Image 1 (cartoon, one colour):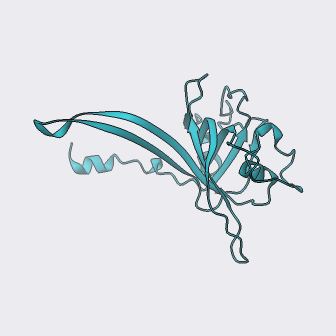
Image 2: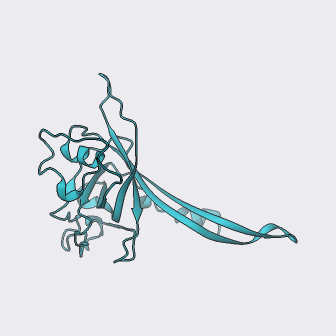
Image 3: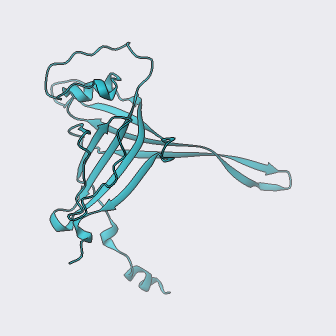
Amino acid sequence: MSLPAIIDGLNRSHVRKWGLQALFLDSPTAPVPATFFDAETLIPVIPATSLHMGYITTDGVSNEVNISSEDTNMVQDLEPVRTDITGMTNRLTNVFGEASSAWVNALWHGVPFEDFPEEPDGAWVFHDGEIADYPEYRLLAVYQDGVGNQARYRIEYAYKAKVIAKQNRTMNRSSAEGMGFTFGLFKDPDVKRSVTRMENGPLFLTP
């Protein structure tokens, strides 16, 4: 096949920019949704028990997957004769913009999901130094590109998410305070998965 023919086969509809994003937390024992999209509209279905964590700063969400490996060499060859995977980490990082949300601050202070305040908007008191580890949650990320009947939705569902790092907070008169988290995404032993990723939307409805 000639290069012009290959170029003609490019599909610009596969280029995505996720202008709308939302992150939700749920209990680590919450049932895994049977479906993530409405059967008729193909719009995402959000579990009723999950909590929307609010604004995300314009840096958006980043997902880092690191694969470590080990080479085996022999004296007769300068290149490895085999390479074995020794580890894999999956991490999601974002900054929440609602720094006064009771839910965001509960997450910051390592509060188990079942002990989160009932509402995000209200007075709260949390203390540092009271935990030895961070609890696990289920994490649902929903992204949208396009609008109306041209919308595409990306869903990424993490079965076991845990805060493994936090970013520095900066408070001043010119910038909004943000609360940045890195979540480690781990395999759930019951479902044998760490993350499920999918894409759908009204764009795919039969005319």
